[in-house]
Amino acid sequence: MRNTYKSIIIVAVVFTLGILAWHNFSDSGVKSNAKNTDDKSNVTLNNSNKLSEEKTIEKSSRNIVIYNTHADEEYVSGKKVTDAAALINDRLNKEGLNSKFIKCNPPKKYAKAYEASREIITNNVKDYVNAVLLDIHRDISENPKSDTKKILITLAKKSPHYESNKKFAENLLKEINKSKSVKGEITLFEQGILYFNQDLSSNSVLIELGNNKSSNSDVEECINALVSALKNVENIS
Image (cartoon, rainbow, N blue to C red; front, top):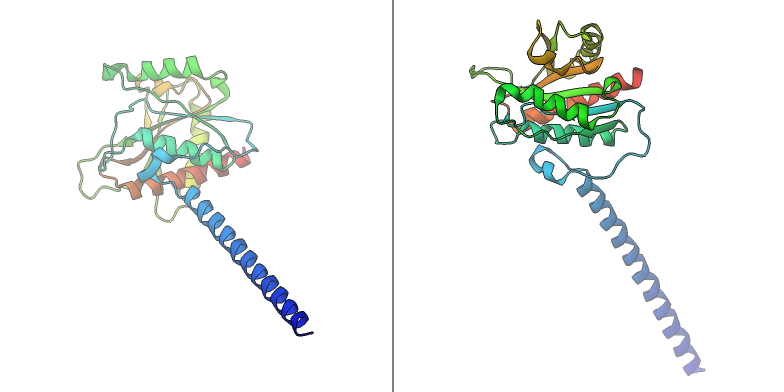
């Protein structure tokens, strides 16, 4: 009888220890997965080389093409407008928009920059006429008190698509100006160089994110405002 009681006690102890071990293992697995999820989502201009390759399954029907005519433009940190453009592209895809970033190399002759980016667009974008074309730049200012969180949308008035581009720009501006920290403005040129390539599409704009004095955090706030604006404009278009 005494041996029987001992056996029952031993079995009960082993069973209890097994349950505790399984409970601890399950908890550690959940915590580990949560940490990995947080790590994936923390992408900023500072670590833009770690952009996610994951794409949202559902996409909008209209293509968005992001490129940089002046690919060598830099911010105060040394980050380039190409880094900003790549981050915009990544964020738009995560929001479910069908975005593509096309890398442009700085041309040997600065005056030929728009010819070079024009050739890249026409050779690499199948339906560029119906695409949203976003040429990402940064402004330049010598004023130490300049607004480093400003988005300028530039249009060429003599572009054959000026009216439709203007409507698109005004819709973007309306959404951008909902931001508490970032403000937008539209600037007009009569013709610009090759209409700033805005004759290629009826939804084509040149966008300047901040200026040469903008910090990475300034640029990221501009990017957040632009991505939100694009998402809202695309959802109602």
